[in-house]
Image (cartoon, rainbow, N blue to C red; front, side, top):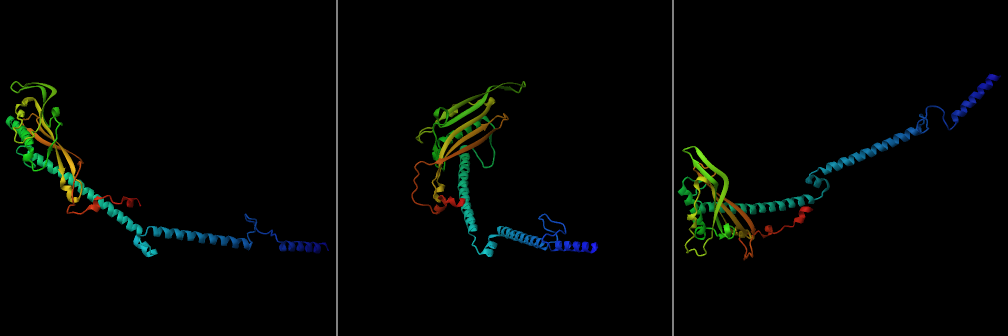
Amino acid sequence: MRCPLLFCFFFLSEKQRLVSSKSSYGSQDALGRGSHHPTGLVHSEFHRQLRDKDEEEEEEALRRKLKYFFMSPCDKYHAKGRKPFKLGLQLLKIIIVTVQLVLFGLSNQMVVTFKEENTAAFKHLFLQGYQDNLPQAVHTQSELNSSIGFVIEQYMALPQKALGRYAYVTGVGVNGSALSLCQRYYKTGTIDPVNDTFDIDPHVVTDCMGFDPTADSSAPRNADYKNFTLQFYKLINVTVDFQLKAINIQTIINNEIPDCYTFAITIVFDNKAHSGKVQIFLQNQASIKECKDPNVSGHGESQQDWFQTDLPLFFLFL
């Protein structure tokens, strides 16, 4: 009789385990629930689906933002119907800056052209026998003396010779004069090709003489330059320096205040090669400044006042 009782006891014990709320079968997960419990699997799958859905929505939103960001203004207008105000503002800024650059370039070109044309006029005025695009040089002593005298004579008679309106600048030359005539030569320079000998002291000596224009054009001109003896055989160069003033009234056409120019002119007779050929150069340095007490009545034919004024530059910083 013992075996049936033991069997009944084992059967009842096993039945109590099955109906118990705590399952003892199967392995347990990290949360303490059995791997065969259906509720844990449902919740895990549900959360995973929600998470995947949120990620897809974020990815799609980011993709749409990037696509809209790289759209052209026309595509943005078709997509949302917004007018391209920023595009219009950028075009306006480009137009304003372009107009200012063009006007600045035109004004700068006028300055360069005025200087180049005056330089060409000075070459024709002060260089004896000048021809365009041809090198200037002399080859004899008489030609060199004649070229130097021609420069000084033309300078003294400038108001009667020049087509442009020029003014002398005094006090800029030697001893407060208006024009400086200088020669530079070696201190000692004896050359004897017959005996193949020479004696040269490389120290350079500079001799200068100053000249002033006469107020009365009919008065006899200063001819002291004829007494200026050149040291031909040890001569390095001869320079003539003077300054002239001029006004560029061409800018009045564009309703601009004219600029005043000061031209520093240097004419060089270069003999440093000692080859029997003295080259001649004219150098012109221009300085520009505002004219004093300008007086312009009326307006020119070209009405460009709104271009010449300072445009509202605050648009550039929007």
